[in-house]
Image (cartoon, rainbow, N blue to C red; front, top):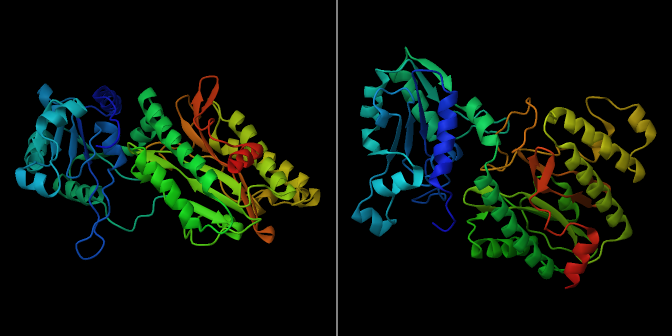
Length: 429
């Protein structure tokens, strides 16, 4: 494995916290991701189901976790089912975890091979009253392809129709949102790798480069530092492309006088970084570009101060809208009449700043968490205001990842160049 693994004690604590929240006499099961096919005999790279990873640290396919805290036999309270390794598999794909390795990596005492799962579950269900099934209720989830979890859930509901069904996701949304020190350190590594990629790009960009060449510079730096690549599809948009929020074509030439919006983040050990910076193709911002840049930077810094324990994210986003309104007024993009006559459901600032400012981040870029509950210490959020002026072919977004503490926050990307002067100085080399 190319990344530094986290200690098994972390996963033991995670499972203990989850089981503490389960109802009495209940069993919970979790499944790894499938390896998804493309065409012919092609497949996509394997990406572990993040709940499975958070509970076990296992980063391979064909894995099942069973948790039964009230099991009569102590050894049955945590069971991991893994793919049985063999010599032929080792030759063609590389050896999988053996039982000793799986035990050491997860801290789970009972390791069985996957074919034993149905038989073991049937034996233990005789002691249980309820079954916890996992799902993906994330508000941004797009459900087109059936996952292994979907498939197994349907089978379990059919096989155990008289059992009470509970949901694991609400518990995990609470637990996973609070990052441990080990997780923060892993996320910091992802941010450090992102910083290295950005500094490389600052030395590379000049008029005439293609957006995908910038993407390639990031990828080179990420891979050489132990990342498996981008934590999400990178956005590298110059000129008018910067005003397309999810622009991923990355195929245009970067022209003198334009600004490039770069939204990228490295993955490290399954944890994500999420950074946005804007840089001038020619190495210098125009006065207008700098004014818009500094307006976004001002909103970003003030927004960071608003994220603190006890705050409700919905109310926070209203406050950020007020901050952005002031900046858009000063830039002459909206008028006082626009604000006075605005529709509260669609404030005037939305014309130039149409997306949210912050989201949870962790094992998933848009990580799980309860938006209706108060912010707590240990949450990690992005802060990413932007101003998009289509009529000027200018889009500016700035984004850092911050850890909420009891009395403020820690900026995990505070060491990455952000000030317009620093960007220009590094580009000048």
